[in-house]
Length: 68
Image (cartoon, rainbow, N blue to C red; front, top):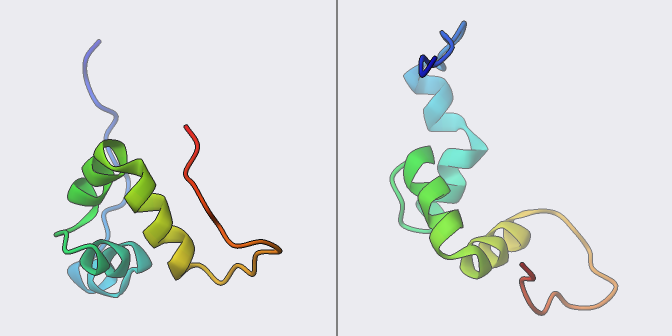
């Protein structure tokens, strides 16, 4: 029962190139989703600081710390 489900859709190279997640990974010097995911697990504070700076969120108080 270790089989992965078959995907019904895979993004085209053009879709991947234009994706926000690709831009976010590149902003951290990473090459794609797999590296971004690994980085988010290994360095969650840096990952979330980068993510929150990329999102159009206005904070009532400045963001200070990542909390596990």
